[in-house]
Image (cartoon, rainbow over all chains, first blue to last red; front, top):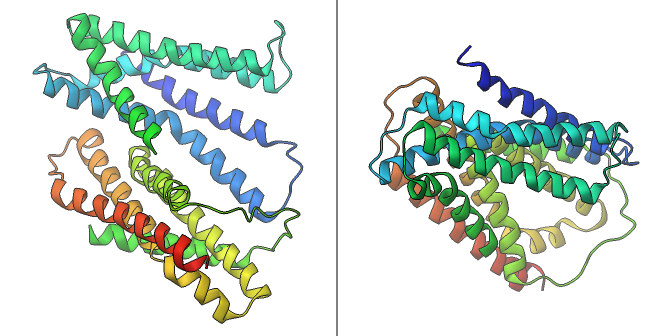
Length: 159
Length: 158
């Protein structure tokens, strides 16, 4: 039962895969090159949640070390999995929308905001649960959950 | 690092051969605009970054990205050879072809990260991360990308 949150990652991977697959349907190009491109994109989409999960597990471990705190990898893994819940919801809604199930009339620009809100939720849950689970100060929890992302985004903006 | 480089070479070669076999599609529009060294370097640096970060996906993204890079090259080569002489091809391609080394090296780094993660996180084995070798290979990849971009703009495109 304790390992149940870990199921969020494969579920999210499946959603990302289905969103990518659906998004490419009806693209109107059936050349071999484009078909391979779609296949590669779909597989990469499947592995994005796993990649992000491992990224946060590794960087959290580094940050805990730098801040002289003790991290339990199993507990941190569960914290990260729970943090993915808002992303799971936004990906699920997006997939439904791509299949034409859209009872509240969301548009693509709305979905962009919804998706950003999902990732915002990810960081808020990650911060609050890290703080709660490991009894850390707000400052340390913020550093652990946000600093690696800010660093990567900063480097990304340079390139 | 050697076995990972070998795997990366095999992956790239497979992509290259597959790309060579793809039926060419005639492009209706071709962007022949001028590129700066930084435009090209940025594009290849992004590919290097994806290959290395792909290690976090247990190497799947690194392998896919490398194979796809090879595939695009194979595809491009098959089209170019159909329309120009091999001398022209060599003159325009060979000077900056060293960027392939950077792609292969970065894939090897991604695979190295993947093995480290597999051993430490999933199998709880005590594995030493060879920081010096890793940083040296990373620096080499970046330098190669920058040199290749310079050669592409100043030699290949002339």
